[in-house]
Image (cartoon, rainbow, N blue to C red):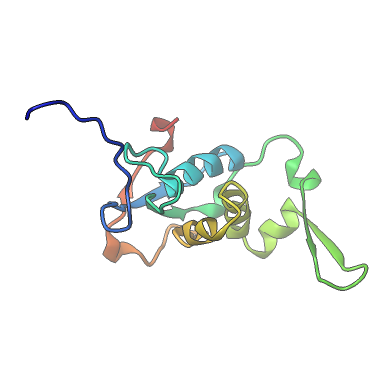
Length: 151
């Protein structure tokens, strides 16, 4: 019987093909870069995207110290955390956090755009951010891409 059959193809961990991607953050705006990277990590750019499966790519980001923030966000944007003790709310501006570790700005921005569940935690482990041009994933042969080609 040669009839057309339309079946929804659902990816699983055995059928998914994960790639290694290299992104240069030099001169990129933080939020725009983070949203595109979150889509890459989630796998939304692939035709076999399945919401409950880790079908995204492994993303390596270099030159995190050359990221841009628009407007007065370097001084006005604050990152708030809590120690767990009464009165233990602490905050850092973007400049202070950048001075401590430039990679944490990108990591926090991308993590906030991923799902808040165990899948989101697993997806976050596919992100590797480095301040300079050197990275330790040369063995995986990441493919350098231009983020402006993605929506």
